[in-house]
Length: 546
Ligand code: TPP
Image 1 (tube, rainbow, N blue to C red):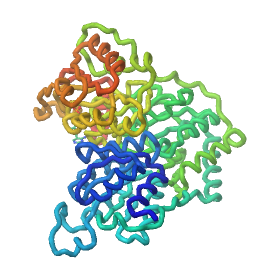
Image 2 (image 1 turned 90 degrees about the vertical axis):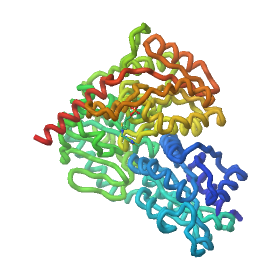
Image 3 (image 1 turned 60 degrees about the vertical axis):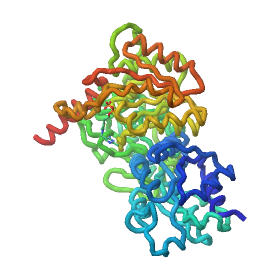
Image 4 (image 1 turned 135 degrees about the vertical axis):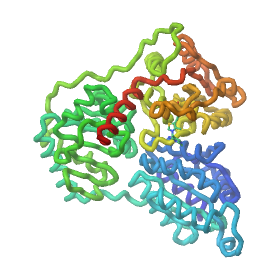
């Protein structure tokens, strides 16, 4: 008979988890012992819990499956709150497995170490940022509770919370079942697909916009099939950048409103029917739109619901909708021949001379590198580096494009490397690197060799562009490259185009340790995309104020 610990680990594995990220503490030590000794799932420990959360989140995003963090009570769990909040906002199914006091400790009459307010404050905090919770205090009901919560995580693609009282870890329990996915009501699905077919059938210039849910549910291939059958051009949102990497024939670019390629912006804003698949309706995706959505001609599938015009079909999963539309495409919804704008053109062919580097040069250098050596998965932090990522060819990307929490890039890259075995390219600013960059010191232990492009402008530049008069955005120059060897990696500073191109080639050839390329940039210089983004935001604000 399994114990609660082995049943939980096996249950996680049966629901798609492939590894765990964590930091132990006394309330979770008994579970960590089982993690290590059972070998049911591989585990990776990092240095600080925020990084554990980001790594698990990125692992989930890349593999379209559950990511898992295992943390101790209070001090550990509260440290992942921000990462889990970001995962909630950006719809990443992170399972938080948190230790907790045992039954006898609860009634000891003493305040317990790591306790914040009440013993259950931890549960209350995570209720707010997870879509389902289970406290495994009863071995008889624990397997069903775990199964319910893991199904919620998979069905809604949102974080969940599992609390393990430390005295229950070895209790014998039944195995954790895998509950079937709840599918759409067939009549509702048929009615909904019929409505969408009619809307698309009437349209002259329909466009499909995709965002992260299509990756979370493993739908990229099916969405590409749907787009091909309908002859629909597809654009990604800012948050959805990197989607449909394998379908360049249907992808027209990334919609950034007034900050983006004008042809892509026109395509979306002049569409007479919009099919928004898995799209987060957030400001970073749509604040720069010149035009409000005309809901009469818009379909939005997100969070297991479909909105058409001014009505909504609840409990209608996007997977079922995409399949139903594929079935109707062709016979019922005819593809429309269209003349489409040319694909977005990204900078390449960097002249390797002694010109001092500007942020957009990094995009050109990376595009050249990918042309020569093939695609690399990318992660990016928030900062100008994320806007530079918009100038890099559409390659798989995990980045906090909506929640915009700094510190994501490096641990996310470590998560991707650990989970997939692939070598990621990490884009990060010096401000964000100061938060979580030290996690690179863990690469040696696990044999990971990411390539890190650190944009060092000695500045919180993204803030400076909004408020140039403030001196608090000045950072000092930490000389990160010099610190790399102590962390077990290789570091070098580059200041010219020639140095950058050469450093990237050397990094590609160097295996077995991380490579940190510190790109030296002047304060006040931003990528072309960030400059357009800020101009667009400022004029949108002025319009609102006026
Ligand atoms: N704290 C967190 C956790 N997330 C944030 N987004 C911010 C603060 C506010 N913030 C947004 S961008 C930014 C700050 C502080 C500066 C980022 O600096 P850096 O990483 O050096 O990139 P740069 O802006 O210079 O490109």
